[in-house]
Structures are given as C-alpha cells and as structure tokens.
Length: 208
Ligand SMILES: [Zn+2]
Image (cartoon, rainbow, N blue to C red; front, side):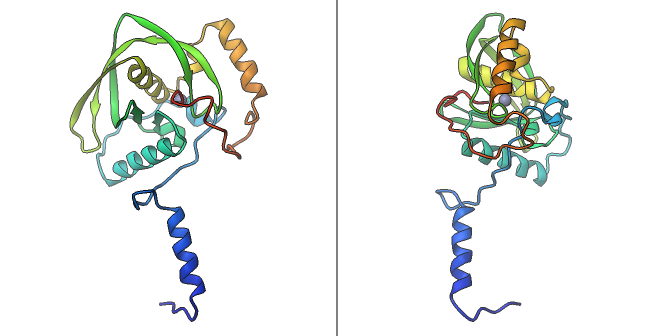
C-alpha cells in the first residue's frame, strides 16, 4: 500500500486517466496500426474458434483504433493479430464480423480506396458493387451483413486483409506500378512503425 503525502501525484494520475478515456468516459484502447512492409499484413489469418473475453477485447481494440485513426474499417492483422476479425464504421453503421464468408454481386464499381496501412494514399479499385457476408458476432451468434457501394467495398477490403491480400494487389499492372512509386516516395516507406500521425484529410471516409 502506498500513501501520498502531497496532492501532486493524485493530480498527475487524474490527468493520465483523462488521456486514456473517451468523450463518454469509457476507457479506450488504441493500438499501433501496422504499415505496409510488415509481414503480418501478408500472413493469412486463422479462423476464430474461441468466442471468449479475449475475443471481445480484440473487437474493442479494433473498434477504438479504427475510430481514432479515423478509418471506416480495420482488420485484426492491421494491429498485429492473426485472427479472422474485422470492424467497420460505414454511414454511421458500426459493427464487426468474425470468420466472414462473402457472396459477391456480378456488377462491379470502381471508386477511390485507401488503407490505414498505407497512410495518406488513395487508389481507384474495382470491386463488386454488392455483397452478402455471413459470419459471427463476438458472442458466437451467426450474423449476415448485406450491403452495397461503400459498405460492400469495406467488407471486401477487410476480408482481403484476413487473406493477406492488400488493395494494391487489386490494381492492374500499370496502376500498381504507379502506386508502388507513390508508396516508395511516401514519408513512412521503410519505417518499421509510423512515427507521425498523417493528416486523415486526403483519405477521409476512404481508409479501410
Ligand atoms: Zn486496409
């Protein structure tokens, strides 16, 4: 048991506590986001088998980190966890999906797409316009997520992450070559971890 003789330390602790809490007073847990070049982003993730407290903590970590970035989607490998889990926050719809399997519509759409693991960069990517995603919630209950446009794009992008596939892999060879040039010129290229927070302005609403 430690006793405090002055008021200094308790005040310091109160200040630290504020930094760890969100606007609603709940504790938030923001994890470092892995950047392109980290092998975890190229490693296929394992299916979730235990729907336990650790899994619920992972969903919370992903949600807090995604909202802080800010991003519209985040997959577990992006915070270094090799499990088939992602979160999304598209058009005020906030949720998560575990062990997803996708049914894609035949019609496709090309739109600008970014990725939190490629800070500040956006490339036009062709994706299926609609998707029906089946999976589970963190309590192990089966759920179906159906969406089109932005939500469908997010679900496809995040499920790709779970397979070790990155959005630059979806570009045609010429566009991919140009994208790699931009990536090599990015200030974060070759860094083991992102040191500075990139302005989210350019990728606002488009970083998955
Ligand atoms: Zn991504």
